[in-house]
Image (cartoon, helix red, strand yellow):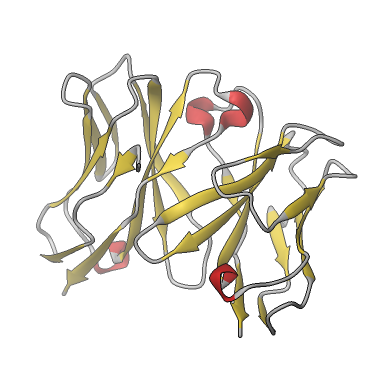
Length: 114
Length: 114
């Protein structure tokens, strides 16, 4: 049973518009959430994270929102740029999880059209 | 700094053959991980290590073995490869207490088992 789910496998958006990626989790012990970005033939790279003590974290064009009661988080990219075209993975971790282990969602492929 | 490197980048095996994937990191990270990425499944943890000489099972350990003889290296072995092990393999590293449990990933190894 997947503990972290990204229900939208793909997303297409026009350049300059907002991209919204969603992620749901089931394990109430998760208290750190991360987003990774992955280009083809490269490893994932860290994008942004949020602790469960917050409901929003912003870094430039990227904002992550956390709704603990709904066990839901989302990543907003505003404005979207062609270079944002990539696969985005949501990941979760429990506080002091052994070895900083992460549980990943299945990924959402984003295509930003010029 | 090279970060996390993986050898080889590509490999084709026949069923029953064995091989070892090498991961090296130059960031003096304590923790290291092996993941596999399959379409729609995200990244699934195979094995991980919290320090030199230690290893532990992840989510999908069957058919794989690992060793961490030196802090900077983490080896993933397939003793008798099967077509179900066709995947892209990623190594990652981390440090205790890193904000958000961030992990740093290598570029991946694409393995095909015929």
